[in-house]
Amino acid sequence: MIQAVIFDLDGTLLDRDRSLLKFVEEQFERLIRPNVEVDKESYIKRFIALDSRGYVWKDKVYQELIREFELRLDWNELLDDYKIGFSNHAVSFPNMIELLDSLKEKGYKLAMITNGFGDFQASNIQALQIAHYFDEILISEREGLRKPDPAIFLRAAEKLNVATEACVYVGDHPVNDITASKAKGMKGIWKEDNYYTESFEFDAKVKDLIEIRHLVEQWK
Image (cartoon, rainbow, N blue to C red):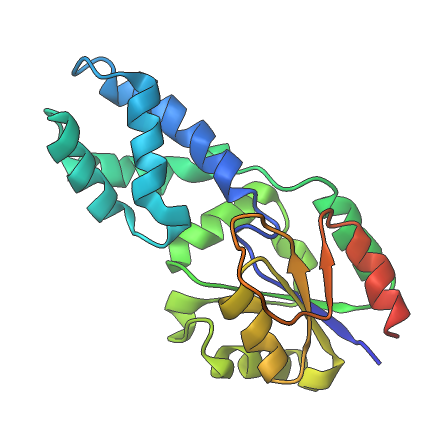
């Protein structure tokens, strides 16, 4: 019997691609354009490529952008601006609130496991106004563990006081989210992402978050 649903953040609840694009466009207009003549489209395209869907931290991204575009700016200032300002552009995937409301109403325990820096991820969660839905939120920097380490999945289940076999994990990354959670006995729901083309096992996949409520009920 499923008792708990555990979520990833980036790419699952937070539409990181759309959020990043909104932030980069705004930062360009505010800090890049006034200081140097750079083609906006080329700059944004290169930023997103260097970012590698969040797997390259922004200190490296900004240093490379300054080198390539010959920006007369301090990468530390750009990085600080990113840390402070990204959450102002955070947007969720459709039907996130509807799903969380439904799961809470049905009595499921909810948790989140996300890789990333503590304060940065906490500000994004706050910006989405969803912290109150979760019984436990595990951010890798604060936990001293990162997905796909199996220990962080076990820790989440222990904090919820639920067996791993009674947990569903929802995420977008084939290895860090789905393969890792299933290895500890959880059911894995893949939040489908066309970026990932490799074959891997999952218990179900969804395009829209709202589909999850019906899947969880079927496994009850």
